[in-house]
Length: 125
Image (cartoon, rainbow, N blue to C red):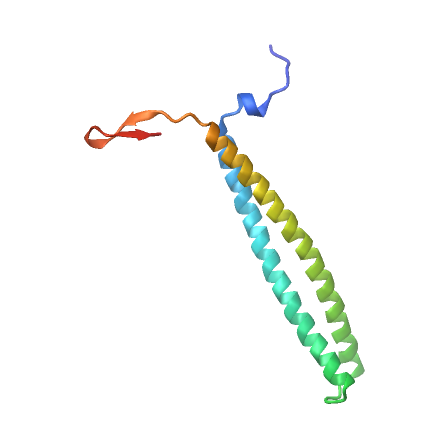
């Protein structure tokens, strides 16, 4: 029995790897969309809380101290959520680009063959 390690570039069917990469790309797309939504929500929460703090500091409205402390907490929490999801978003984009590049390379390696088509035409398959 052959004991050498399996080299995915030589032994694996490129079509199987392409299918796997497409699933990976779709997974990253879901992560990217989720991050975008959370980033948008954190920006909105920070804006509303920040505006409340500024308005309260200028004395235009009187906020209960607990509400004011809560607004500071929302701003800080929004910063954390924004930063964390921005990092995750960039990682998912980089992983998507790498998977797309690999998929393109694999597609380029597939040897297409001519098959008979309808009415005597030939198609690549």
